[in-house]
Image (cartoon, rainbow, N blue to C red; front, top):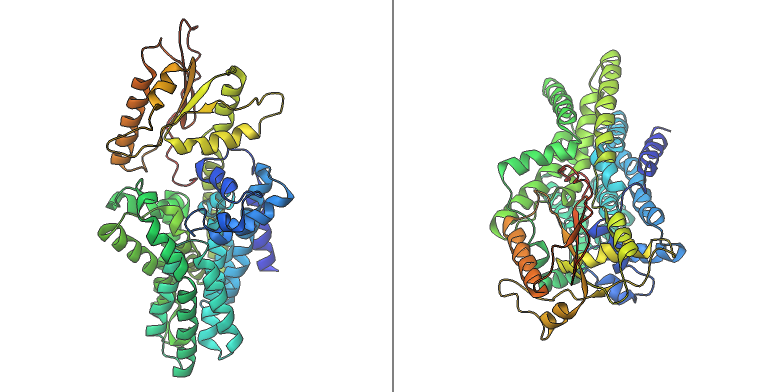
Length: 492
């Protein structure tokens, strides 16, 4: 009953205001990658294998409808399944009472709810990482061959959902090395883990071929960004403080108890520490030595052990203290949820509607950077039929820094166009400075290519700037109020 209640809470919080915000870039890309008219080959390799399993499921899901609410509902369902799965896995690590409390903690977590409402594969990654861990812990405790087969299958699907699934495999390997279990049982688990890694080699091949270019926007981690990650993961500074107090209470209680045999002859805190610490440490090492990859949403896989640690701390409290702690934690989480629901995303709906209402036959459009065409066109296709005409000709240059060599004749086409719309993305603080510098240079090149024109009309939306460059005289610009800058790491 308790696991069903956690499922209901996660489902209700995920459905609340599900369609209140416009799709941002990555969500629109999900729909484009998994489109029903794409072949399975195109779907599976849309992102060089990353998110392949999610795109496949979304491809099938889109056959029943493609509205924004319907598309996001798939992620909500994956997220709603995560708390019950956490209870199943957690009760074999920390006990039923602490696991149930941890499931409720995760179901109410603002970071969790934010990504439950995104048309991306993060909630699926979270659910599969928990299910993989469940079969892994079960494999430590039972010799059943079917458990190892299930573990290898689920882990492979997790790897094909997101590359960061490899960090889950890594902490499983650490536990296998440290746990004192029967050698035969250890050998069968090693074989299952090795099989999942071998099955994931095609993904590694495609990822290596793509290189680090798709991550060029990620800034190098700093002490501030690492500390901010924990605030984001908890859903706010006050929620994080409550988490730390409860975890400290759980650790103090564990230290005061006599040592006893635990899962795979390891204490719960060691398992939870490896579950949380290994992905974080490996991500930081890769970010420092190879390519920055420290992005909060990629590390959603560390939320389950954090929730279980908080649940373990709660389980050590006496009934009155437990009731008070639950009420306080619920209030703090509610405040974080309110902020998560209110935090805006890029407003492509209003941007597309503004252009559609004012465009003329023969208009051209240029996006800076070029991939902004994906969310703009996605929003345009969802406008009412009487509002949405044919989109303007896309004249965005296909160039690469630092030389910005444009295709032959591109400047002549842009200069000859009577009216040109320029769509520019306004970026937050979580983008690498050099990446933003290159985009500014691109924008300057585009404006120079337009030639001498009167002052453009301009409209400002959340995260987006829209300019209309027209030859001849134009009326005064119509400017919407600039939205106040909002840090958005919890909703991206």
